Amino acid sequence: MINSVKDEQKNNNQKINKKTTKIQSKKINIYLVIKRLFDILVGLVGLIILIPLTVIVWLAKKITHDKGPLFYTHVRVGKDGKLFKLYKYRTMCIDADKKLEKYLEENEEARKEYKKYKKLKNDPRISKLGETLRTTSIDEFPQFINVLLGNMSLVGPRPYLPREKEDMKKYYDNIIKCKPGITGYWQVNGRSNTTFEERLELDNYYIKNKSLWLDIKIIIKTVMQIFIRTRCKIN
Image 1 (tube, helix red, strand yellow):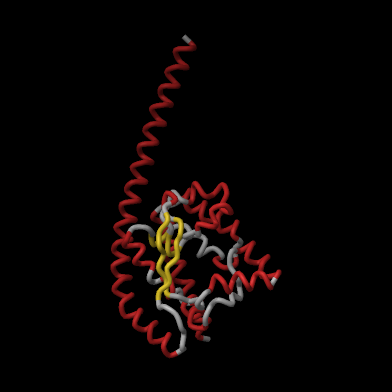
Image 2: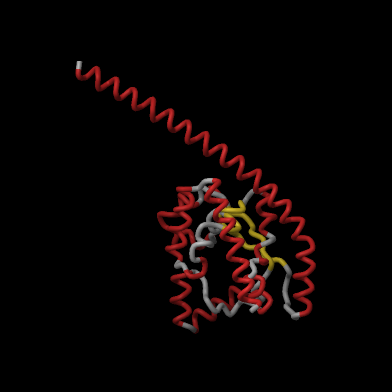
């Protein structure tokens, strides 16, 4: 009798779990469809803005005598670990990687900083025009091409470099479940002030808690932060 009751309870629990899993799966599918449609819509708008913006950036490069190509492409890790080419306006000098390597060899403090943050506060590779493009986040506009191509989303984890895979450790498998984003949870929660480890934790949190409402909040915070940074730059 007792065993019969236990078996019945077990079957009921299994049914409830299956039903809950189906509901959660349905919610995730709806979220992904809406997210992709929104990405396409925003991507098209971004592409339209990108055309005149590219002309303006090209003219600014000519005026400031900023040498080198207008666009910069770099291989990044996408969803399911697939590599893709990320597009940006170039903000660094020519032979930036060689310059960084030499700078880190000659500067121990910078070497420690780069190991901890995977970036430098006073990066010698960034041009004067590049600094302005980065402050206003204009340098990231070409990534709307990536959004339309489907290898990026408007909101998502940071697009990590292939060489960072080893440093991502336990977070790697979870982070690659999502398309990387132009903006994301870590960008609006510390950005340059976060360590590499903290960035991973924030991206991991986003993936575990992703929702339309969280995406909307991230987009609003991103716009606000760009406005504040631009205003500070002007002043």
